[in-house]
Length: 88
Image (cartoon, rainbow, N blue to C red; front, side, top):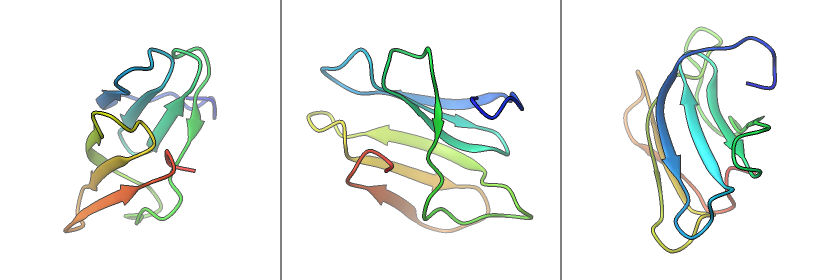
């Protein structure tokens, strides 16, 4: 992650039709997005609930034809969160 803290990737999702857009759920850090094939990553936790100060994503999925639509579940919270702007 670009915050320099590192972490374990729990799950990853790749945007269909774009080899440069990748998402990764990093344990106890949150969801990161790369738009350059994984060279650089940006944290995309806006709107996601925290548990003791950390976002703990469990699952990610990207819409098969629109890489701006992303779904995520977060550990300890019921429900699925949806972004329609690529996490921005």
